[in-house]
Image 1 (cartoon, one colour):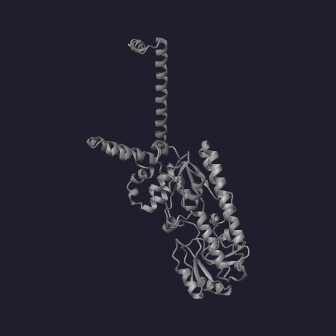
Image 2 (cartoon, rainbow, N blue to C red; image 1 turned 90 degrees about the vertical axis):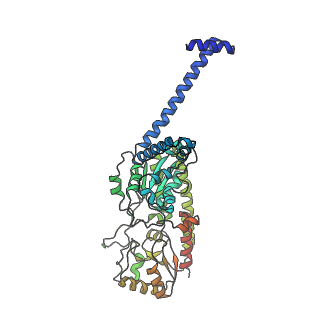
Image 3 (cartoon, helix red, strand yellow; image 1 turned 90 degrees about the horizontal axis):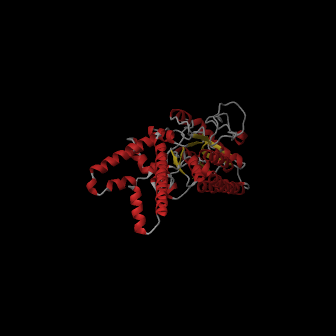
Length: 416
């Protein structure tokens, strides 16, 4: 029957039987290739669907399609609405916890433009999924990934990361990640969460790996008196049982090493785009080098070298630029200093003629303001970049912008 159809078509078009058969064969091959390409795309989607979140998305899609069938008379509006869902919308619709996210949380989770693709949904689903812990890890990963990955942050905007812990929905994100990026120490929950949210194919990168971490400043370590000891507080080698200080991202030169660690992890997870990751990391590290030089030039001739901070987050920055931080609290910003510690800080600030007491944006500044009032000093923000506030986001601030604000605040305080 096929031969008769071919002959008739050849006769009607004036082409030879051989030419007609060749054309039919070519059409058959093209049809087979198209079918194989379609099956390949479906296979990729199926692999993505195997993760915990993928299973939820598949169930959600099935329910939406069922709804479309029962409302066929509406012209398929529900179907087109379902196909227009971004990956962020799908995640928000999955599970009862998703509805509890605030709009600020959703924006931080998905990043600014990181996960929403205006192209085909299949293309968006094949991107590398990178889950990070808190803001610096998110920003460094986003800069390296460019358009080749969807980068999300677990700790939402405005939250203090030291005490944050993942929810069940966060655990699902961790389990489904291609790459998980954390700093270390700040995220005391991370290793336990990784063990619970098993994924043999997931690549985990501890961004501070290879950096020599320093002992932090314990809250009550200077009860025996500051004196000249305070200037060497970051480097003293005595046994106070100090925790290690995780705040390496506040030294731009150490932040570059974290960026390079992240770049290596993304390249391993996605070799096809390794050159892009290398290029993006190089470009961002060049900006960090410029920032480092700006700090060196801006602080080298400062009149004073000591600055009082709300908590001991700036040890690496202080060491890099020849300064001394005098922290009110220890490594955790929610530590309340004892009355004795408060008295010591007031005495030391007066002795050093400190003119500014620094506080932070994510922590109640009442302690810093109490000390400032006691000694007649001003207050100002020195941001440890543990998260962005809504105001920071509204003003378009990022890591580089906030660090430059920190530099301006230090220059002003140290030259009064």
